[in-house]
Image (spheres, rainbow, N blue to C red):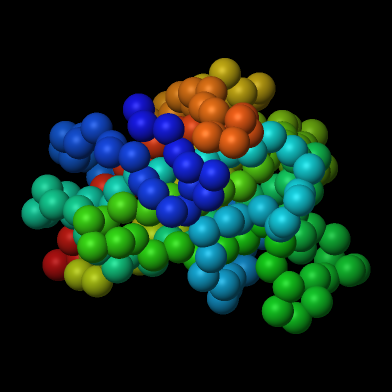
Length: 197
């Protein structure tokens, strides 16, 4: 695996070409989705506390077995303490404020990459069931069905008991070092979409 430069958005390492034989597993959208997150390569706010995480991948068409350029990926997650920016319904986020949310667009090779912090687990109330750390995806590509899914991490707590965790959505993370000595976790998540017709 190639190492990233100081700004992970500047370069995407070569990814192992997958064999896209099955569509990415769908998952629930959850109660914290918000529309119109800005386009940017970083999900977490500047200087947000937590362990740095970089995720890269490609969006593929199941019908063509080829990457899909200009796919739109909406992303949202909890902070390191497992809290979403719109979780407290009595104190909604200010209009135009999007913390731990972004939109990324795949390049001409169907590739995407973003930087964030590792999200924290949290309990579903009132059941008390724990959610394993995860990142939400909503993916749109011309000529393909919209996909809503979630990304999970190998070795994270509550994978076995999270009711929405599916084995096909769990990826391994590796330790990486930027040229400036900064440490981060790195993972790859390939997305396969079904044609809309």
